[in-house]
Length: 230
Ligand SMILES: *Cc1c(COP(=O)(O)O)cnc(C)c1O
Image 1 (cartoon, helix red, strand yellow):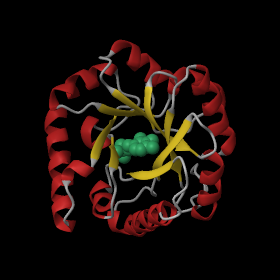
Image 2 (cartoon, protein in one colour):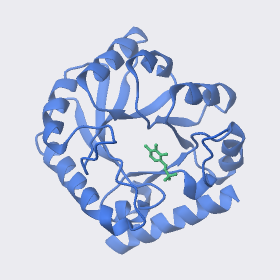
Image 3 (cartoon, protein in one colour):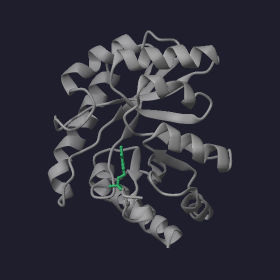
C-alpha cells in the first residue's frame, strides 16, 4: 500500500514537472511520517525514499535511534529553543526557522558540536493567524541577521499553505513564495542560498511543483489519515 502510494505521488510530481518543463530530479519528495509508528517507514524504504519529515523533536529522535542511519530527517514542525540540542547530529534540514532567537539557539548548539545546521526560513505567505512563520515583508531582514551566524546555513524558504479542498486557491501563495525567493537570491547575501523551496502537501503538491517547489512534504497521501487520539 505505502509503496504504491509513493509511486503514485512520484508519478504526479513527474507529470506536474512535465506540464511546466521542469526536471523531476529537481524535486525531493519528503514522506511525512509524523504520528505514525516507525514500522511505516520500514514499509516505505523499499520505494527508495530516504527523506522523512517529523514535526516533533522527541518523535524524530526516537525514530532516528531505531531506523537505518542513511535516512535524512527533516524537522518540519514548530521548534522550541530548548529542544534544539537534541537535533544536533540527527537532522538533515530544519524547515521551520522563524525567529532570530531560534536561529541563535541553533547556532549555539551546533557550534558546540562543530557542525553546520542547514535551515529554511518559514514564511506565512497567507498570513494565517493560526500558523507560525514570518511575513514576506520581514523575510529579507531576518535572513540578513541569521546569515551572520557561522554555524547556520540558510538553504531556502518553507511555507505551509492554508488547508483547502481546492489546490488552485493556494497557487497564488506558491507563486509569491517563488517570487520572494528569486528576489532574495538576487540580493546575493553571503552565506545564504535560495536553492530550496519547501512547499506543497497532500492537498496541493502538484500546484506547488508547477510553481517551483523543490521539496514537497506529503503525509496523508502516503501513509493515510493520521489519528491524533492514540
Ligand atoms: C503534517 C505536515 C505535512 C503533511 O501534511 P499532509 O497533508 O498529511 O500531506 C506537511 N508539512 C508540515 C509542516 C506538516 O506539519
